Amino acid sequence: MATRRFMTLPRHILEGEKLHPEATGELSAILLQLGLAAKIISLEVNKAGLVDIIGFTGNENVHGEQVKKLDIYAHEMLIRAMDHGGHFCVMASEEDEDIIHLPPHQKIGKYVLLFDPLDGSSNIDANVSIGTIFSIYKRISEGYGPGTLEDCLQPGYKQVAAGYIVYGSSTILVYTAGHGVYGFTLDPAFGEFLLSHDDIKIPKCGRIYSINEGNYFSWPKGLKNYIKYLQANLFEGKPYQARYIGSMVADVHRTLLYGGIFMYPGDKRNAKGKLRLVYECNPMSFIIESAGGKATDGKIRILEKLPESLHERTPIFIGSEDDVLLVEKFLREAVG
Ligand code: P6P
Image 1 (cartoon, protein in one colour):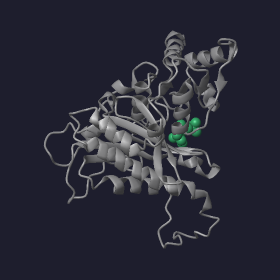
Image 2 (image 1 turned 90 degrees about the horizontal axis):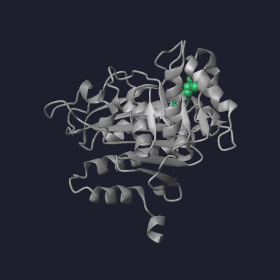
Image 3 (image 1 turned 180 degrees about the vertical axis):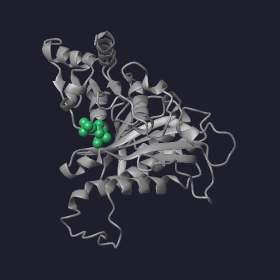
């Protein structure tokens, strides 16, 4: 048991690599570097509220560094942390309209990194949990030169790893490389991620639904019927609870641990909803499916959708298998 107590992220990743003789160690190196970037971003996120208090005035802080918007900071930090290991041929970020090429002098690798550097950053002023989401593929474009947009628009089932970091009451990194989902909590005392959630499995059915009910009148009829059904009935003697944080990483993290369903549907105003397919819904769907759950756009499995553009949006219904199957049934059977 003592060994388990100090199962650090690096040790877990390296032990996971040993289970796969074909592993070259590259993916391990990538995940380790992402863990480092997560620690650095966590430091900045956790002191964000202090910017006005401890005198970081104007655009410069006490170190004479530029004080940036946190999401730009996270974006630049991830690129700096990941662009020199020789692992990637191309990257893409929610913060950059186009794909991101490696610096010309850098070795080109075989992997692709897609990320949302700081999802939910509009919530930071209210101290609401926010997060970083990442998704990793192998290149599919020919040759050994810079990667292409094609490498970034692969269907989600081709991901080799995905994860998120949620910056909340504690900083937790959750990842999967397709063989189980593991959560690590950052111990600030010695700056290490320790295994806190071993081989996470999402409950087959939950008792929590998570959606922005402010959009109710724009919802499709089937979704209105589904929500009314949850509100009007008892399940094993208990009603469903409504929980909505408004930060995808936090809402999906709760859904992963407690079960239930998180939804961001399309509606009359936005047919494709709000959340991005490539660097939000695909990685989250890979994680939830690896934990035994489901994720669809209401009809199609998220991981089977073929992205047409880097920042395209998709409706998403993600969480416990039974909950996702039930909402799909209501959507399918609704008339009008
Ligand atoms: P709404 C945060 O701004 C975000 O991109 C996601 O993290 C979150 O799930 C969603 O938007 C919340 O959107 O329209 O409910 O405020």
